[in-house]
Image (cartoon, rainbow, N blue to C red; front, side, top):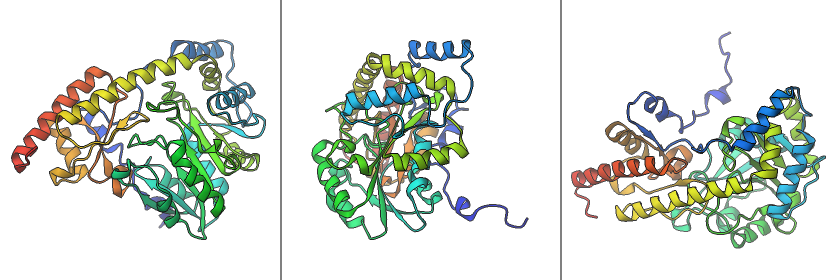
Length: 393
């Protein structure tokens, strides 16, 4: 065995998110603003439903596509929030988190040498999943002056005769950017004109702070061209339950289910029973958490203004993406120095694509008390840097 490993896998870069957290986990009095994980416990009524399922011995495999009751509730949820109808029998698949849905969705529709358009900065798994599906990733570098929204001309310039799918990652991780209906309409027209598809990752759709989220699947002619990805991790504080879902035309869902069938069998049974309750009874919990996140979001934006640190205002997810280009350091250098000197972990913007260089991702899925301490340390840190570099602010 001289060459046991796949060259394709060897060439993949490790996730840029995890690097700092092995360090911070062993650092006394350190604060992490790095992981996109709600600090709220899963609401008790949802946990209680999971416990009840265990007590009743509901520990067997479900159908490959997921519990019928859960698929019905997913259908009901999308109908009441987006006014789009998905058939629970053949247009919905329950997955192990949204990440599995992204992976198998790409594998189900990609042929070798197809191109996948990926706007960046964006979630770290899109590009590797495209590569593992034998696609060619085509990167669109989004611009801070456009609030990191995808512009029609950027999409048009990226499309070739090999383009198969656009990944649409809004509300966006890491920037917190959103795409409103007026932004989506010209994008949808191009997609129809060019006869391509969309994978719309809407895992943060319930966490928007300006207007109600609009899915591209709601626009005329787009449901049949969209794989809608969502899940329970962010909105319901259910990260460890590992549960997501995909909604798409039955022709696509049937092939995704086939891959899911061989690789996974079914999503965790206990989690599925809990998720039924989340969709039925969790709206007030989501609203409470969204209100708290919005308070934290406004606190951070105000703090950045006071310290003259450039940052556009995010209206979705639970991240801010401040610019640190004034310090003439790479984002990794800044994050490393900040961690070692002030004991605060953040993620370098470069972890989310080359155009994320010069930015940092800070998550506000943490308590306001921790955010206050972290911001005080950040203010101390950049004040020292400005003095050292003779930067006047």
